[in-house]
Image (tube, rainbow, N blue to C red; front, side, top):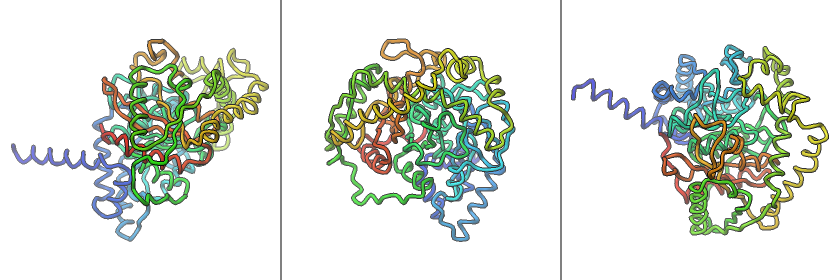
Length: 487
């Protein structure tokens, strides 16, 4: 073996070692001077080039990013100990980013450069983080599979012929592939948790309104939340601390057993239409948690629970879209209009908007039905969920995050679940529950199918109990194990 070959292999090995670092580990390594931000960023950029066929990013400004990394190294030498100093994060391209194009997934806005950052972007920058690039997404965040007609289908790092999930598709894929250690995403009915499940990473949806949403393209103000993709719950706790400014609780005992934990499952609601392999893995995990000391209680949320959350939540989702987007464009001086966006949508999405978003559409709900969903259906959904949290004393409700593993790209319009052909909207049939009333939810990976596709476990918790949810998730992750951090 000649010197050139040996050097190439050493560089490849060192690059892989760096890109396998999680967020907390990378941040500590830069802070401690074990690695430089420039070396780390260079390794991530190399991996992004190698895996460009995933279509995980729309925009990466390499020169500006490397310059920012060098500035971070200078800041560290001058004594800075910022929590995320010099660590690059991905950002979904629905977030405004000062000086970096924000497309919202639309070709017409490919060259739109905002004059301000979204509040969540400002928060991570204040902690020393760098914006690695803007992640690909479904147009206007309206979809669950990761297809974007202008910027390409985001591919699943575990199997390139399968979807990544969406709408925060590139965010999930880039974290799963080791291109970035974390990425900011958005979730209205499952747009963080669905791709997290499909790509085998941790995806966190905070209590609606707990994380700042200003500067992020909306769908439904009642349901929208910003959130994050990471490779471990520990990393999620760190991002949550940075974005909210709340100090993280100390893990005083460091234990991962579940003694004293009380967990709820609702088989009639969340195992009704689920692939057998996903159900089998879910039941195996529940047994693992019981063996680790958790008490698991079974609850029944009612025969009509799924119909209730689907009707109410999708109705709110669609009814609020037009006014929310129009206001966002006006407030942030974005050079387009709702009407222009509608006219430029891909045919399938334009048809959907015509039916459920535009007033008078065949599937649009009336103002009265919208008010009923807000004022009657949502309180009833919360009352039912409280049977688990209050009546049974459960800290979280567990369910498979998605009813199946990632579908094939060629079969993403209608998918097969438990032998039935259903709409792709069924991919959010479990995540929509937490979204309906704004509860926090997190998806953690709990293994692979026989075909090597990730399976996710969702934990939903009462409103405002985000920190308690993250602590339970950390302990559960310790029991079931953390999968390989990169593909």
